[in-house]
Image (cartoon, rainbow, N blue to C red; front, side, top):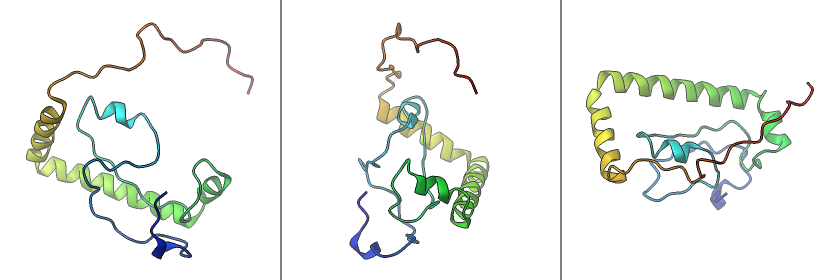
Length: 128
């Protein structure tokens, strides 16, 4: 995961990092990339589990009920609320983001990589 050597042996990474540089890639996947081709997007992460916990693991599930996760989620909620407040008080940020988005996408509309005739399989839901 690219954890710097100086954090080995620590349980939590308590560093506040600056903005990621151009072309920085997080080693994960989600549909947020598709969304970023439709509208300007910002993303942040917070610490909600012990440093080095593997994704999709029992360690992450167990951490979900911990004070670490609750504090991380509170930080995420505060970040979202304050970001929304800043956007409401400074509409020029939205204008600037839209202009940068148009410049970066060149006005090209989003085109899904899946052919339009591909549909998810339909069937009965499993018994609960």
